[in-house]
Length: 128
Image (cartoon, rainbow, N blue to C red; front, side, top):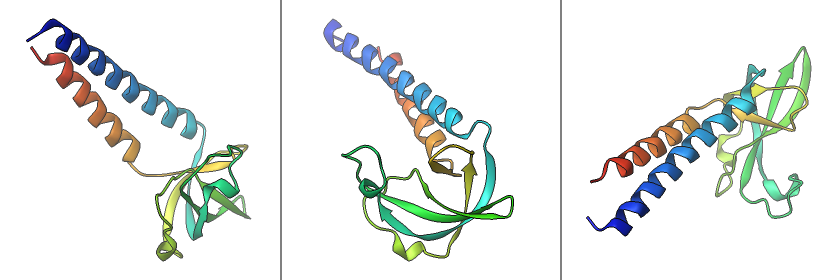
């Protein structure tokens, strides 16, 4: 195999491994010290209305969660391509951490994505 192509594969492999580690670190940082609570979906809202970043796109769930007997309406940190209003009333589990503006939905998506990126990175590093 040509040397320049091997270098590209190695760089991509290391990049995928670094991205997998960064995704897992961000997930850990988000849920560390949080409490897993049940929540009910109230609707779906465009993220640019509530995000401090001007170019934020996608949709987020607005959920109802009870913390120490107090009812809170919060948004999840999802970024859906289209509105999921059909999910209204559905129960989900979220990670709640006081002081955070958004909730993390409890799902294995980040871990699966990181595992796929790590496998792709290892695969690229093993190409001979």
